[in-house]
Amino acid sequence: MTRGVDEDAPPGYVPIMDRRQWLRTFAVFSAPTIGIALVTAGLAVPTVLLFRTDATTLDRWSKIGEALSPIGVFFSGVAFIGIALTLFLQGRELRNQREELTIAREEQQRSSEIALRELHTGLIRMAIDDPELRQVWPQMSSGAGVTKKDHYCNLILNLQKVAYETRTIELAELRGALSHLMESRDIYLFWQKVRSVRVQVTQGDEGEDFFTAEVDRAFAQAAPPAPRGLLSRLRDAVGR
Image (cartoon, rainbow, N blue to C red):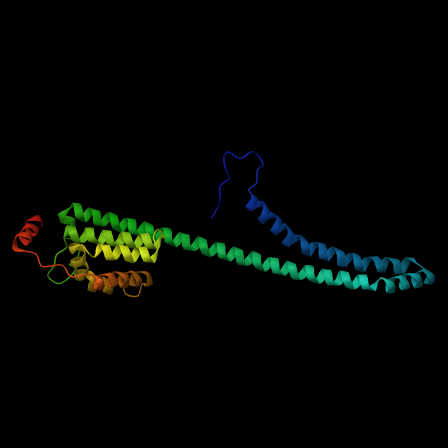
């Protein structure tokens, strides 16, 4: 994800995180170059001295070299540590890049899912507003037509699913919201009517199966609504 530069920042300002990343990248790629240069110098200097000095001087340099050999061992150890550190930093840099790519892919997938759900919500709103378009939707169960309340209940439940998937609410909040919604007679009867069809349509989708299980959990814990009287049923029929 690309971070924009603050418009109020002075010219030439570099964010602290970008500077740290630049220094880390510079250290990773400059360490091998410095190591190669030191090894080359260590081979070239003795070769030049071997061809340009006499036997007495070479014998003197040989004794000096024997006296300074622990220093060579020390620098060899430092070089080994430097190479190991370089490999470690490169590996960590690659891991960080992979994690950033994974996060970017997840964000893109989440954005696509949200866009699809917004499209689905728009279609349901059209069906709620237009009885002719509402007839296009298939029956939720045998002999039961699709009503405005059914579509509205569907929107309410989908809102809880989107809120959980976008991490707006936690699992405990989702369960509390579903338990509260199941106190509604219409949502209880809607889920009772639509659950079997929903399982057939979404079976195999991990996210949908999880949400269906959570709604089933709230549905099982809720008390069934009391039967309505004749007057209420007639009022509903007239409303439809």
